[in-house]
Length: 207
Image (cartoon, rainbow, N blue to C red; front, side, top):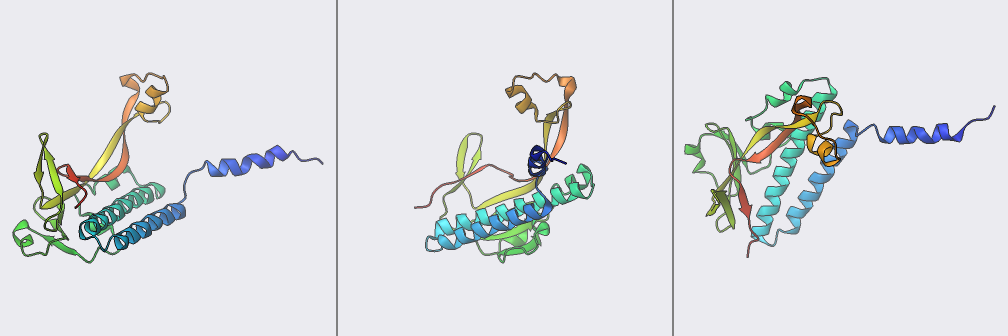
């Protein structure tokens, strides 16, 4: 009996299109964390750049933890509401091991005693706060104006996007491909959790 080689050539392709497994996502998250940890050490001789690299490393790990939390909930059959409830929560609670310069949950009245270049979770506003080092070129963007910042505030937000009911694709992808999507055929879908700045900021290159 002769076999058709095409039958076997299609199977690996279908497997590749199945998406990422939980193991592959964990490997990706760990790889990104290692890369940013190396970057933080690479800029250790430049105080301003080292602080920026360390800040990016921590926020990247926090975002990866939230993405992993969402992905795990979806695999276990959890609803979007079970993940969206984490909105306004403490991102540090999602990390296996918080950074050493994280000092826990406290009101702003106690945060004045903390050293610079440290993290804490504001129990009043429910914001994750990073206290900038002195002399860093960080500015807050408000009403088109830049003002020097001494701290950066972040919060967990649930991200939603409009999708095409028929295809499940984001509306902007459908419309960019030339397929108009009527309002009645649109719906909001939970995309995941993001770590968003409370006030937009700009971190300029130091020196």
